[in-house]
Image (cartoon, rainbow over the protein chains, first blue to last red):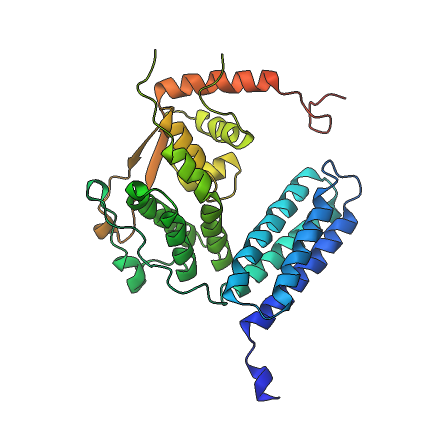
Length: 215
Length: 107
């Protein structure tokens, strides 16, 4: 075997994984005939196609983030279609899409996410001191390092005064996901969800609290 | 009467899940599971409910350095929040026409 082929590059593996997601999405689309959400299955194909295009060229870490967001959308939509349809073929094909997305996510985490992501997100705030990360980084936590880094990014998007709280809360949830046996891809999905929700979360946190409970 | 919070579909799922046992404390992942929402998607909803004081939260009572893990944040409905949540869910369900393709929907 050619030595050049012995080591599989994450980028080419990601391209193949994305192509598989697209193939599975097309299979799912062809199985969905009378959908209550008629535009959903074709949209799954469109999004999977965009992931595939993103993954087909030279993939930089810059391309990974939008690809992951679209993969998450594909997975959510496949899940919705699986719930909405009683047809076992649709359910089976949706499951195959989810499997392909999981694999693509697992491959994607091997492509480096931009450097400079802090392991420790927030400037300390005295009144709600976060738990140090050392016990996790020393190996006590079973959670995936990339997911922790993505979570740290999500925390950075929140108002500074609440970062310590949500840093600990998110890490705690990730820790429990990992303990429950969640795959690396599932942990990454959790962290990406936090990123996706961060701006909405930030908006909610910035709204003024109710002055007092009214009777 | 208009609700203090925007009653999105996801927020209604969270309230329904928490109203199954209003005094029971749950952490974020449990609430996601109970509401059938993807993990990591409910913190904006929890923040909204805390802001209007329908929800109370507290840290798990453990020492993280002893446990070797971060503390969980537990949430539960406040007594007032539980009442308001029930009323808001009732109002939302009266406003919402059921889709024909859902069980019990209009034919």
